[in-house]
Image 1: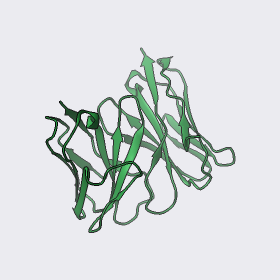
Image 2 (image 1 turned 180 degrees about the horizontal axis):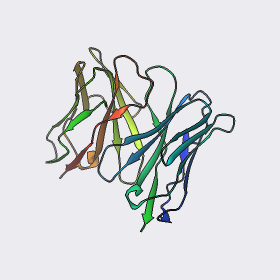
Image 3 (image 1 turned 135 degrees about the vertical axis):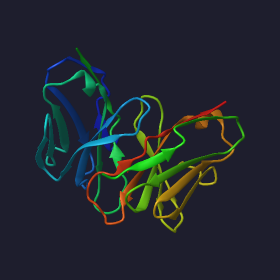
Image 4 (image 1 turned 90 degrees about the vertical axis):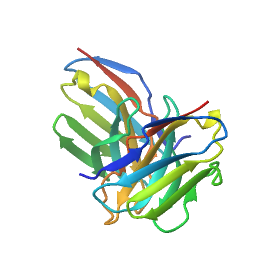
Length: 111
Length: 117
């Protein structure tokens, strides 16, 4: 079993739809959870960051972490064509530790 | 915000030659740099972790003599792919954590697409 599982999609939705992206993980020691957006041939860009369980909202984006279920989610409201990209979940332990990434989900928002 | 500049953005080289990729933290001091490799439609796989002034720590299966990492200053880390072969063709990305130990997600460079012919 991989440490972080993420459905690679592709996921195609109409403009204005609510998008739900999810990851599960196996290592209960992960404490920091992030979502990155990656456009083709570019480096990942940090979208959301959460520590431990709970919700965090930033504009059209909401990140949720459920540590008891080892499950994290990213919701995108009122999706736009410009949201079309690959979304990567990432997580890490405490301290100076590297990120462990999911496989990424390719999202297309159709106008 | 924190910015990591990575160069070159793409490079084509002949088999057997070496290629150097640079990552610079522009507005913060990066005590730790992480180097990743990403194959098409795959996730980022950690290659090595480099701390300023010390030897890099390589992940299992990554040849340290082939992928030379230097992190001589708090703002610059380099990855040199030596004696490159076509199977080394990939997207290489660095990421950095600032010296004050920010708990936020790390900052990534824009990536280098290496093609070995």
